[in-house]
Amino acid sequence: MGMHGIYANGKRLAAFVVPLTLRTNQPETVSDSLSLKRSTKRRAAQRWELEARLDPLHLDANELFVQMISNGHTVPFNIIIPQNVGVDLKRTATGIPLTSGNAGATQLNMTGFNGLIPAGSFIRFSNHSKVYLTMSDRLGPGTVNIYPALRVSLQSHTTQYDDVPLLVRYDTDTIIGMQYSDGILMDNGVIKMVEAV
Image 1: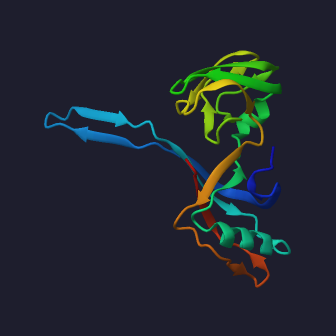
Image 2: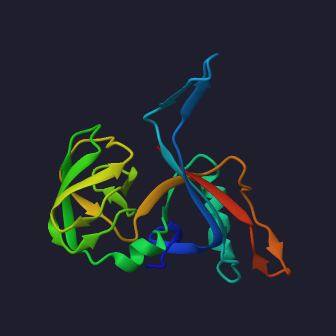
């Protein structure tokens, strides 16, 4: 809890501070007929997008600056995605869940843990980098609903539910450089990152 931020080589370079916006981007088409009957369709593609301010940096500002220049808008990197406050307060899970399911599934089977993984938890599986959201509570072993649909089949793969890494790229409107306030604090304002899918 509280370890969210931008990481490089296992070290947190910068922490996220509020305001912070985390949204899903899943394309939808909506059209109205002449009789005003609405037709809607949601595509399968989905990614997470995060906009956040960073805690202003002083003595360690050079490390974030080097990371931004090295990665630019093209090289993916890990952040630790912030969990919903309600999830952090309600979660009692212990152990490492093993999850199984077929590609395209929205219901998965979890075993090997005790306690509660609440609805609204971000999770990630050991065989691919996509981050999913639990859509139902899971108290001990059993079935859990997820969003979006599973991209890659799972066969007893370990599941991370705390300090979940999200593989992202800096969005194209994020300034790759440094901005200083008061001459000594690196403060780049709002940084936007999109999941590398």
